[in-house]
Image (tube, rainbow, N blue to C red):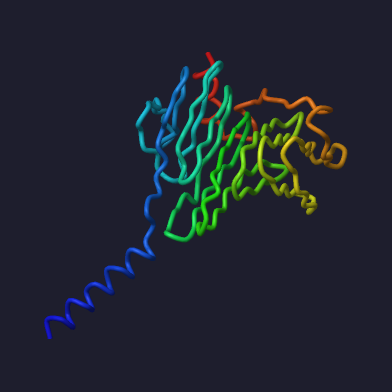
Length: 216
């Protein structure tokens, strides 16, 4: 009877391990200049080693940036960037994370791991990029729209108009604002990759105030 009970306990433990997230936190790796996270409409300074909760809103000031470990990858928010992290989850077979870029620039480096289904997306008001294992940069501002530059791998970019385009290493993608021209995929050599952004892009008033405070 004891052997049966032990076997059942082992099977239950194994089942929990296989179905539970291995880790689902975001760890701050590096900070340059003023960087904050919005919590209960209050701006809390970000420091190296800090764990950020899921659904965290991160804001960087002028001449600032922050790098964070997110599952099997890293993301760096450049100067004057506002972004929300969500859906951060890892199991033995899958890894998911999403970044809602409200304004500014995010650089992501996602590692492709055999046997681990990875879903990592960066969404802006005009489009979404989806990666499985790649390095790419996304910038967004209301005036210029979304610009994607791929350093390695392939990124699938979906515009709000319904078009989906693969963007390979060495190429960039431009999705202008809704009222502007259709999106384009051009060679990296022919494109100027914009890294300037606006932290105030379609953000609530408290986020706009936080960005101004950090930038001032």
